[in-house]
Amino acid sequence: MTDQFSFTVAATDGAARTGEIRMPRGVIRTPAFMPVGTAGTVKAMYPEQVKALGADVVLGNTYHLMLRPGAERVARLGGLHAMMQWPYPILTDSGGFQVMSLAGLRKLDETGVRFQSHIDGTAHLLSPERSIEIQGLLGSDIQMQLDECVRLPAPEAAIESAMRLSLRWAERCRIAFGDQPGRAMFGIVQGGDIPALRVESARALVGLDLKGYAIGGLAVGEPQATMLAMIETVEPHLPTTKPRYLMGVGTPDDIVQAVSRGIDMFDCVMPTRAGRHGMVYTRHGRLNLRNARFAEDNAPLDPESTCPAANQYSKAYLHHLVRAGEILGMMLLTWNNLSYYQDLMAGLRRAIAAGRLQDFIGETREGWEKAERDRAA
Image 1 (cartoon, rainbow, N blue to C red):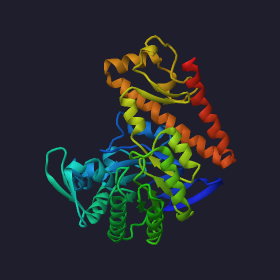
Image 2: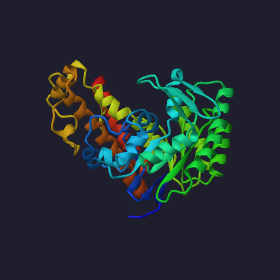
Image 3: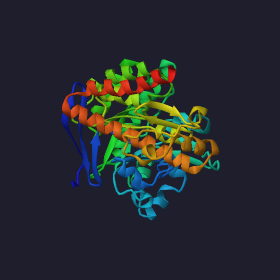
Image 4: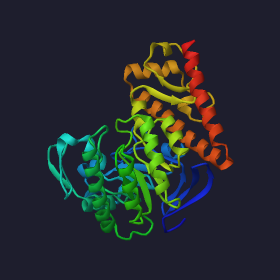
């Protein structure tokens, strides 16, 4: 294992790449999907299950861990890796998403973001420097700059203001991060749905010579076509030698589309949140197990899956667990969903290496569409 952070591209297929991020705590195979562990846990999953499914990295959240149990406490207890029994890489969001999602509980200025805790109402200042400090106390391997994320659609003036503030904060985060061997800080390209602002943001961040670059502020209300257009706008301006991370995305179709446009890393609460609410992702598309048509369906979700949640339990039983509100139902459906996402990423990596990405995407979509046709018949 290396004591440095590095990224190598092993193969390409069009704009798509497959490769490896190497760092002291492990190798992240790309394209990679990062299960979200907001509060130091991937909800309804054991850490060893998450790893066994093929995840090389998980995501934690600076804002939530700052509030509970507190970054200094986590550090005193040995760091986030030790606490959550995950000895592999962890990426931490900066708290920037909460600038948007908790807009009613925060005030923002050049200094940073002043939050009123959604838990107990206490006041907290999250500046760029404090965000990086918290991520360091957690022991994060990949740390994100603090940024201002704007929900779309939004006025151009608001989008431009947020982009420029995010660039100023990126510079402050870079200085605060300093030189941390084996760790990385990523910048976040902002600019909403305005191509010129996206290009300006990307070029300025590349000028900071960071170890990776994220595209933020997407999957926040805009159509998929807009998201893909912004990826196509930004991608030519990002270095081919650095990883590219599309934040908060997304559905399986979002992911295959973004991979084909050169994205290397993804995270989203969708597979875990959906699993807790009776929704499953499979080779045959998305299924709502609350639906009465599954009440006497004795077939498993997918007999060809290697995940026990998919190949051993009947849809009828899973339907019963979901309707009864049983915790086991949430656990099994989350297990299935994360398994499907990791299998999808492994399939994408193999397809890129073999030069058959578009064939793989076509076959994957055909599975989804055939199931839709069968249900409609």
